Length: 334
Image 1 (cartoon, rainbow, N blue to C red):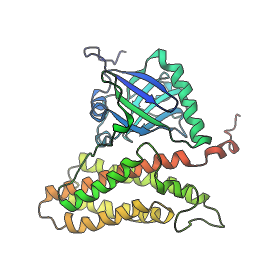
Image 2: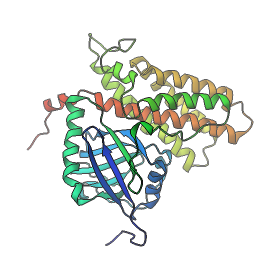
Image 3: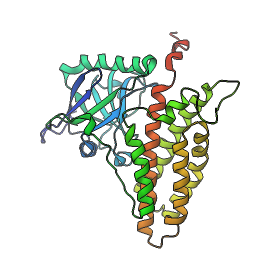
Image 4: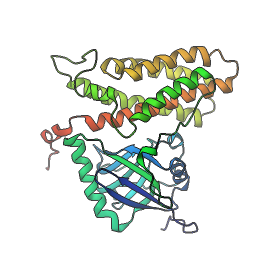
């Protein structure tokens, strides 16, 4: 069965990794035009390239597009592992992912395009280089993405776009503050994450003179807080109108406060301090604002920028974690 829509001209995407100087072309198809439209609205952009850790030969990076969180795909394949190498997917985790070899995660996924055949060998080589960097070298690999019909952008000109601003001045200020901090390391590594991974967090978290557990807990808590808590608050706000402003505030306070404080202890101080400012502004600018529409937008602007920042920390954590120890735990062959 042919699911492709051939009535529209096919858009093409350029993806470049400047440090290894590799560029591939991805040809879009008509399976998930709504998701592709969201991607196109973000172009051009830069990001930190990461490699999958439990999925197999899979590359992914964060797309700076909040609507990807709550926009349903028009079509999903039942098993991403069965798709050809070079298939590009977009997900509700805001990932642009590309399969370049064997994939072990047999889950549904939303395909949006394919790397052109003549670029597949370059893609496979690049995938192995990203894995080596994440496993051993720990050098961040930047990725640049743009519309193939436009000139290649200069990376230094690609500032991260602010997605929501908020309404009241105080909320606009904290949203801009978090956004500016995020923009500095959107395709690199933040100071807080670097500090955790060299054992120099201010409170020296760990036990028996080891900070290994601090790295491990930072990874697990950051991922959960971003992908499963804050992103889902945004998704609920968009897709479940019966959740009014009071409900969203309760979700934030009950689900965010404890992990944000803990993550501040293990080293992500900017995250914790930002949460404290947001919590105070919820009291002053959200709950006390008689204009519920303004108050709701203020809340969602703060949740949105904090979610994006925390998801960036997750990518940075995964890049720096000492995955060299994976060789000590081979999957049994029997």
